[in-house]
Amino acid sequence: MYRTAIEALYKWKAKSTKKPLIIRGARQVGKTWLMKELGKAAFEHSVYVSFDNNPRMKELFSAGLDVSRLVMGIELFAGHKIDPVNTLIIFDEVQEVPQALTSLKYFNENAPQYQIICAGSLLGVALHQGTSFPVGKVEFLDLYPLSFAEFMRAMGKEQFVSLLEQGDFAMAATFKQEYIDLLKHYYYVGGMPEVALSFAENGDFNEAREIQQRILAAYEQDFSKHAPHETVPRIRMLWNSIPAQLTKENKKFIYGLIKDGARAREYEYAVMWLTDCGLVHKVHRATAPSLPLKAYEDLKAFKLFLVDVGLLSCMTGIRQDVLLDGNELFKEFKGALTEQYVLQQLKTLHGIEPYYWTNERSTAEIDFLLSTGNAVVPLEVKAEVNLQSKSLRAFADKFHPPVSVRSSMADYKREDWLLNLPLYAVGNISSCIS
Image 1 (spheres, rainbow, N blue to C red):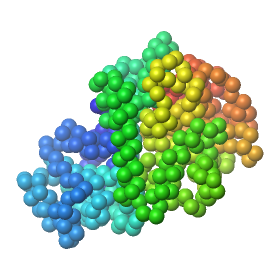
Image 2 (cartoon, one colour):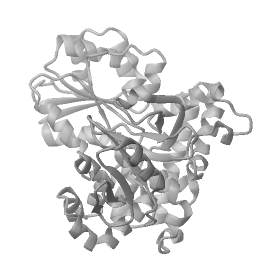
Image 3 (tube, rainbow, N blue to C red):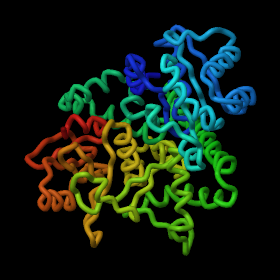
Image 4 (cartoon, rainbow, N blue to C red):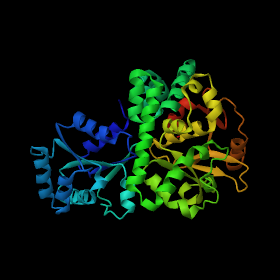
């Protein structure tokens, strides 16, 4: 299964001087596979060390952080000498042994010849618990579930991806129904690698659901295992409220939907915990569509999205027959699934941090605001081909962005002020607005 992130790893390997690389991402998004794939494809040898339930490695790193001693211990663990030029050292679940995380600083300073790549599913949580972090001594790569383009490749539709990458939207429109069918499958299956691989191999929707349910159960076990005991019920309640939050018309997160009388201060830690795990994406409201958007961030108003659209469809209980019955999927859960899908694609794009916008009276809303570096571009999401865009038109008339984007099931079309970008092509938005 091809992951575009492997290209970033090849670039990291090619650097003459590089720091240890940490891959961040939720559990089950493919971090371990990606690290091992890099080791097989780009190095003569690799040494894989998982710190999960590994007392020998925990003892090694707890006894001191002298690099030569650590390398000797890793060599003894691996059963062979480590050639720093041709060997990739892989540290997995690095958050389980905080000293291993701290050691990256000393590898960078005292032994930069060693090529080290790390991953940790709960790394953000570990850092908030006071783990000593090698600030400025490491590089980062964020990994997410498969994008729609990666999903199409996994389904053997490489040429469909190439059409969109080439910007040949006229040809793509000729095969619109195939793209829409693939998109429906993606809404149901999602981008978790194990689920997508299973579906690519046998096309079984029921098996995809079973794997998704196992993944969701594993996430809930993580709540109990890693979160402070007294906050676990709140994390679980907040997590289970997200589908209801996303299926309402106004998707601003409302604490009262968790339970009657819920207050922000009671659930702030739960939001932070889920965000640090990579299980939810927090999209803040921007009070004004001006650069930099970060300066106009409204910390009290935000939307929460799940890590994966397939997991959302699993949590909402969408059935296979709903998926296959024409456009019923888009009618029943169009707002939730479509906006989740678009946000998920935006998160995979380099340099884009999405916000949303409402006016002070909340009578007008723009689903996402994107920064091109020198301008703010509004993006409105439509689940079908209903192309009424009153809020988008009013926004364009008031703020005069260089282009306004509407993503829908309609074909690609560029007008004087408006770009209609098909939902199946939203992953190509960067090239369309730059």
